[in-house]
Length: 187
Image (cartoon, rainbow, N blue to C red; front, side):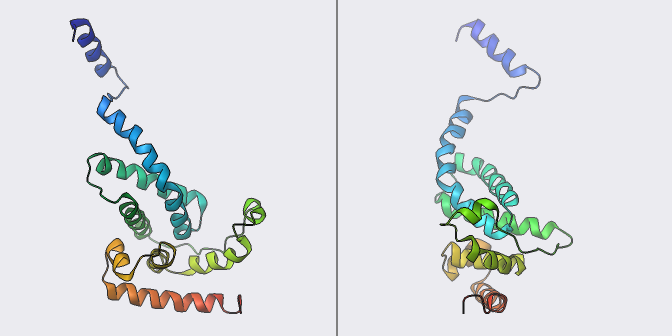
């Protein structure tokens, strides 16, 4: 490298307010974009079921994907989809644990866009989302992992870092609460 090019590189790296981004880091961010694009919609849907709020779901997904960049770039993630789902559930449960009190979650009313979207089934989803919102965060995470993400009991236990017995009992309790909450709606 000529001396003038080396001096310019040193000046750029010392410029106040500018972080130095080497070619390797830039390539990993660029190559991470297709991975994010492939999994973002699924993660958003899961997060929406967990949080029951679009803005909170988007924040949860964004925070999770940003946190996963470094382990992905280092090659520590073999199955990105499964790893990302587990990270999303863990981040959700951690955020809930940090709160000192839980606000009562009111049933969510469908937005105009959802009501117009015939494929969304918004009319059918409103009671389900309200019933999910009434579950404890742990119950909600188990139900979403088991029935939306279609994970087995063992995979759910692994993803949420709990025993299979805890998954089974939590699922049983959550389904009992959902049955009571949804009683009469589809009968």
